[in-house]
Image (cartoon, rainbow, N blue to C red; front, top):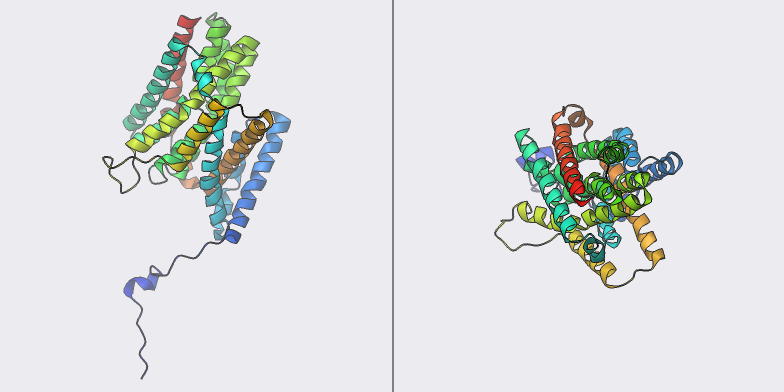
Length: 345
């Protein structure tokens, strides 16, 4: 009589089945949907002047129902993780050490204090509101550094267990909305404070979340303020890598001990490497433009995929606490930047 192995108890629920093997072909459906959403966002951004990241996020959220299709899961996960990390690496070509040095010692010290205080305000606000230090780091870092790009980078370091897709989506929505609002409001604040071009440029560059909105607000004040805002804002972008390194140190990989040897994520090392390369040699303008456009496209595609993968029930039930956790560091950044701008003006 032939013997037959009986199924184990856990296998009644399929727990012992091997994970399905994912091949490159499995990525195509989800990745194709994310790319199409990014192209649609690019069209709206080009024709109506709307922020690319915000359009990609809104389109992704509108297509959230597609996440129920298991065939799209591998491609959407690839877009929201791997493309995100590759885009972060390419952001390193936007900054150089010289741009940071051009600020001068006092302005640089003020900028470092503003960034540190803004992240600290986000952490304190989030913990007070019961959202946890990881969410505070995500929210405060997004406000302090470069908006959606910083939020995506920090989420990659924190991991989905500490910063879920729903939390990341909330931060992206709130930061994008506040950044667009600040683009119109902060130049008015600079006029009311009677700041000169240097002071206005510092105020705008040190406090507005996203790069595009900071430059738009600066040049709407004056060409001189726009140039100063660009330098200050790029200096904040340059601080992304050390902030990511500190976040990786404070929030070690799941299962690792903080006292064990410290290892930077590969995409942070890549960011450092390209920033150092851009500082050491002159990158051809065409190469820099292509890298910047590619980085923007990858980050927009990651945002669209994140919107599609976000659990809508969690988003709708979140209440006002996540918004407060982003608004509070935004107010802190504006107040400190205004004080520094008044001294520098």
